[in-house]
Image (cartoon, rainbow, N blue to C red; front, side, top):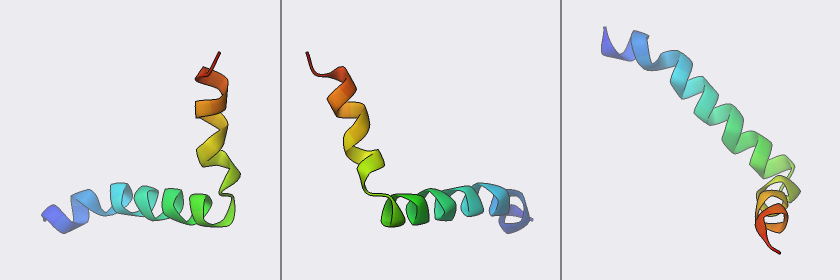
Length: 36
């Protein structure tokens, strides 16, 4: 039951990791916006 409930969240996590893996610039974009 728990595995079935957390499956969408798991896929979101995997998608986020893949996105960061293929587009590393996303990680550094936000800190640059915060910096003065």
